[in-house]
Amino acid sequence: MQKKILTTASLLFSLMYVSPSYSQELKVASWNIAWLGSHEYNKRKSNDYQQLAVYAKQLDADVIALQEVEDENWARKVFGNEYDFYFSTKDWVQRVGVAVKKSAGLSVVAKEYKALNVTRVRHGMDVTLSRNGKEIRLLAVHLKSGCFALPLDAKSLALLPSNTDKELRLKEACTTLSMQIEPLERWVDERAEDDEAFIVLGDFNRRFSQDISHKYAEDQGLWQALDDEGNESLWTPTATKNSDCWGGYYKDYIDHIVFNPSAKSMYVDNSFEQLVFKEKYTRDLANSLTDHCPISVKLKL
Image 1 (cartoon, helix red, strand yellow):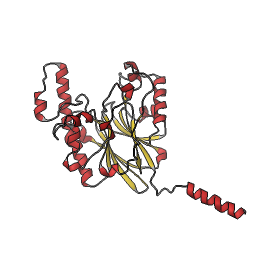
Image 2: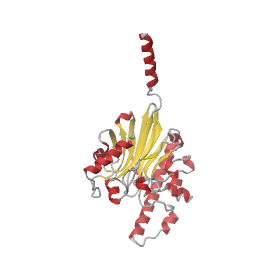
Image 3: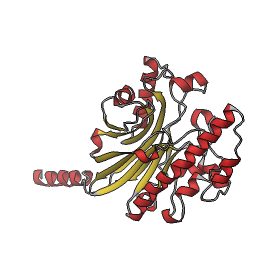
Image 4: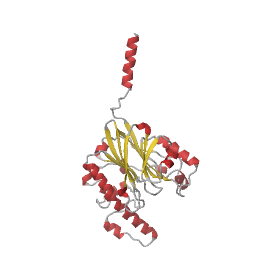
């Protein structure tokens, strides 16, 4: 009888145990934590960092693309010591970084993608993650802000007025964003050519839903430029959804997680989520927390 009990217990244990060789879920997120650094615009107090830390625990992602975070010391105010951090070296408080949970069992190779710095703008972070013999490549980005939906082709840019400071800033923003297309598209094309599974994620400062609804040509829309003929059917869950961040105050997503087909095959169906803050929107509160709600997906890796 004792031998039978032991055998049954061993069988139950073997059923409960999941071999590391099998795919496990990996939660990947993107979060712009506005001005999390030493800049004078950051007026957060200790209770604000504590509240951000509560949301970070709730997010509970294995990998997080971070935007507007100065360095790992500032990141630890929100994420504690559970993560390793990989940050760009751009000499500016709004850096791009990637946080990887120490307990996720991931091998990480990280390097900057400086080619996005076309006119003193932010670098990207190019990170390769591997586990259980599977691999995925991530490019974390924070593109130029201010040109959310206007066409980006040379003719349209030339026609933009520049008589006032506001008009000039808009024209400069659109021109800079248009210049970032080439290095971004080049990174995507190289990964596609090598048949790698890859994701581009972060704050694109671009409403892909509007790029698509305007039916822009390849040289006009950022989405169309990335998803051109050579890039085989990129996909992002944010293109067909409305953002609920701050009660829908920002309806169109500008934060995106973009998959190529190989990466899409790893996507866990219906796993896209937006972590919505429970507080009611005020400008002051959006400044003390952040104006971006984190988004996430799950992968089989």
